[in-house]
Image 1: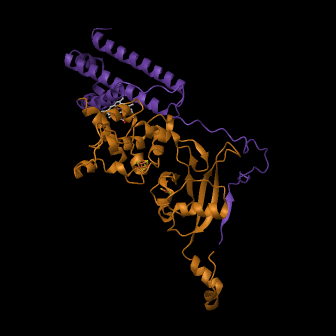
Image 2: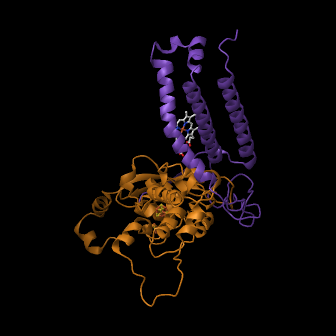
Image 3: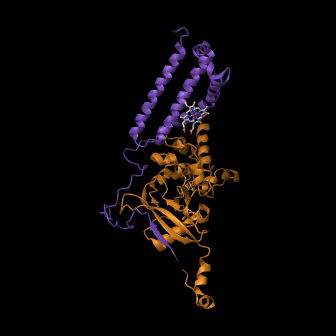
Length: 165
Length: 259
Ligand code: HEM
Ligand code: SF4
Ligand code: FES
């Protein structure tokens, strides 16, 4: 039967022994394999107790449902109704935040979106950061940014002064 | 090829007989990921072009390569009939059993790529270290746990109770699902779909009494909550198990048992 064997042009070595270069590895000195990630070692963390991951999982779903109303309502009011974006100005913001209803709406939206987004990014970091150190510092950066934004936003909503000049 | 018989040689021209015997064969290139730690720490692609019946399976092609072209090609297979779970590999970018994948079904006009499954340490060519996979499997206690005296006869169960976990009894521990999961690829700490499937098989078994314990194990930070519902596992499972649904049922059980 007619069978042909072709290797990629850049690899000239036959399996079993490289043709030209000096052999770095052989039967007695095989290349190191990458450690199996789930192998139990002294450094392996203990199984976690508590329901934190379950609670954050539930929070993502519940906050998502509330955010559908808050965010879509927000976008509708800000961008569509009553002349769209062109109406937005200092006076428009001042007028809305005069009402406790919109203050609560925006406060709730701020907290839920920030915690929801921060937790979402936490899972993204957990899923993609490969080294423990990278993971730790990315999360610290995330938490710092989240606390800063939530506190600043809350401060603005409560201390907003319509007579500022 | 096959040894021609005397009668055939007498009755027709030998070349004509060989032609008709080979008419159903097509030329297929297999691009295989090779790794041999005794030669190099780098994996590389190697092409093998062969004449093969498109109704044969990828496993038959691997056999043909190993037996006729390159005896160093290393892969696992045992039953060759889709039941032992030893030949899961990444074929044309998807996890499949080589013994259940027909060549004609996966576009033999283009080179067919064959790689080891991802997320586990490659030992040689298509052979990976399955230990982390089985470690997660053992962690969920995949055996019947009961209390009290052993009955003197079978533990009976209604057809409905048996039906409840029927889907997850079909698992053959091939690791196609776990090694298709992007969450597992990253750090390998996630229990993985296969461990959850096999926990599901006992959690929802009316005869078993350690469901609560297994749920607690999967409530771990690397348990079911790391699942991002990408459905890669369901797509990969050669047994057609609804893997993502099983994971979702375990999540639901964890939530409803407390609230
Ligand atoms: C409009 C209503 C929204 C709904 C219904 C919703 C729903 C969800 C759900 C259920 C998840 C979890 C996915 C998973 O566990 O696999 C999620 C993840 C996420 N959400 Fe939202 N969300 C909404 C709005 C937002 C907003 C406003 C932000 C940004 C502040 C945001 C940022 C994120 C991020 C970063 C993730 C993580 C992505 C991932 O896990 O793949 N979401 N969302
Ligand atoms: S659930 Fe399916 S893909 Fe996963 S190990 Fe079992 S048989 Fe293989
Ligand atoms: S060789 Fe047994 S499942 Fe493929």
